[in-house]
Image 1 (tube, one colour):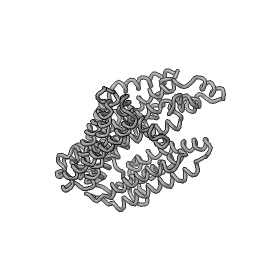
Image 2 (tube, one colour; image 1 turned 180 degrees about the vertical axis):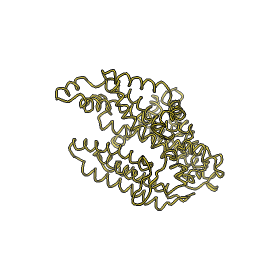
Image 3 (cartoon, helix red, strand yellow; image 1 turned 45 degrees about the vertical axis):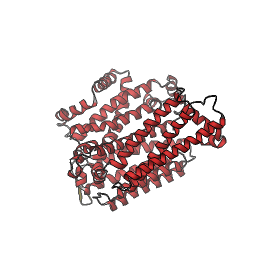
Image 4 (tube, one colour; image 1 turned 90 degrees about the vertical axis):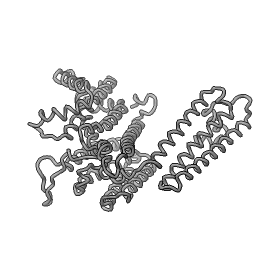
Amino acid sequence: MIEAWKANPDLARRRLIDNLVGKPPAYLAHRGEKVSFFLSIFLGLAAGVWSVKNIFDRYGGGETPQINVLLYSTMMFISTSILIMVISLAVMRGSIFLGRLNAITSVISVLVLQNVVEAIGGFVFINANWDVIWANRQLLMFGPHLTSHPEELWRFWPPMYLLALLIGGAYGSLGESPRKFLIPFTLFVLISVLILYNPNHRGYDYESTMVKLLGAFAVTYISFLITNKKLTGADEYMIVRFHRWLSITAVITFFVALFTLDPPGDDITFASMEITGVAPALWGGFVMNVLVATAGCVLGFGLGIVLAFGRRSNLAAYRYPSTAIIELIRSGPLVAWLFIAFILLPDVLNPIWESDVVMRMILIISIFGGCYGAEIIRGGLQAVPFGQIEAATALGLSNMQTKLLVELPNAIRTTLPTIVSLFIGLWKDTTLLYLLGVHEMFNLSTLALTQQKEFLGLTRETLVFAGMAFWIVAFYLSRISLRIESGLGLGHEGGGEAT
């Protein structure tokens, strides 16, 4: 679009206006059309300045921080300017009176946009009291037990550094311009540092945490730069091999996180120091949601592959049990299975495995996600051309090699958007643990924080913050999915058949 404005500004301007309010009537000459466009811009800017003046007159001298007033006034200036500009164009060109669909749709859209911006901006920057979030940022992240026992927080740093290494390596292997990663990641680093440094209600050792966090970010930068330098322009087989090892390391990182939090078996003595672990029932906060969702995706994905092949098997010993498990689990809602795991499952597992409530929830979410994932993968397996299977057989591949090296990669490739949608759904379903009293982030946002004496009644702030946290993760997963689809050639028509 920028190139179009540079090449022919008049043509680009006319196309923009026609898309907004429809084509002009015959009596409106080209000069009048140009005058109406610039006049609408002038009126929009004037209305925007007037809205800014009103906001500063109302909130400028009050208790609201000036930066909040400035941000809110900027949002209102932009939305008001667009609103008045579109309405002025529609009136001066007469398209609103002629019933042009473009004009009517544009006017309604900018009116809705204006009201949404005013409501959201007014709440976020003017009316909301975010002290409840700043005072409880550690509680929201780690839960009540780990917040009251900060000496246990070291357990999160080994998997955090492994994750930083993975993130840098994954983005570095894409072969894209370093700026596409370095600029947004540096912005994320700055935001994270500001959130950690903010002295408002800061009740933790931020200096030690800041050093460790900056170390993790440094590992990400180094991993990205090294990987980008080594793999840019490398042969395809080297990149595929690197991605395979990256996937294996990601699974290992997940189990390292579980082992670091709660080592299996009895207490472990390391360097004359006794490591007792933190029971899963004592985990909490945002970390709890991440761990449960990750377990559901990793374990559920593996189970889904097994069940998908089992349901397609010609052997009754595999087909019938797989079909029975899939149909049984899919016949009930997740919340029902969570209550079954909470109430009945201990009587089944306790002679073999004395699991607490969180591990039972992880087990059920993994099985639930695996059953839905099995049907998704089975659909992808059915779409694999039989010619590829025959070609694999002709090359001398065994039945197992054909399934793992030919059928499964093609099935995952064609069903990737649906698989990512399942992962996003499992991520959001972790909030159902709230019904069982688990201290995950949504539970803390609705109960624990709003019961604090100094923050009574601040339910909206905590719910908005929790909702935004979940939305950011879900949106990031969707962007990763689009990135992978683009790399696999699925971003265009017929991409699913590309080799």
